Length: 191
Image (cartoon, rainbow, N blue to C red; front, side, top):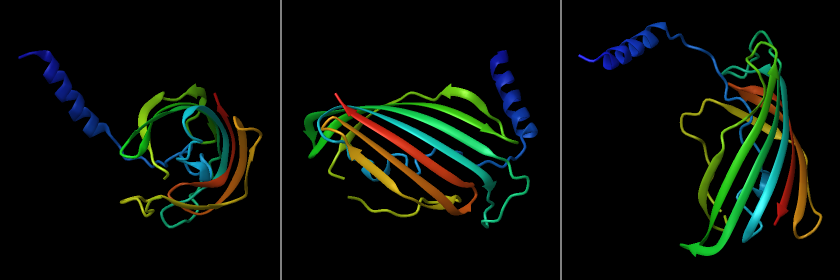
């Protein structure tokens, strides 16, 4: 018998024996308002570059009942999300065809949690269909995380080709996640 399948089987068994449960949170950067009310609404046919700069900080972690978790680790996240979108004039089923390219750069720092010094995230490339875009909203099945956030947002169009937006959100009523403040700066340029 070859050694490869035996080594693989031993690795699986040892992983199952040595594994221990851990507590984890869906850490930012999640799309909790990164793209704001303009999400899914690109300005039309053409090529667009959008830069999102987002800062998130929290010193409060909540459990499944919304109560503080002891220890109070601090967390700070600085995100630079780079997005390049091309929307074609061609349509399928009444929707414009498009391609989206995303490259995040994320720095995570904190007290009592693993951190990174500032790393490139995964390059994401994908096609999409863009309808002029109503839908049903609702709960995500089996999600144990929740948060409520509120705050002001401004968006200004400097020209037909350049716009900028700034918003901040204060979170409350969190369960199974950090609770903090999120500020996002967004620049969009049409080529």
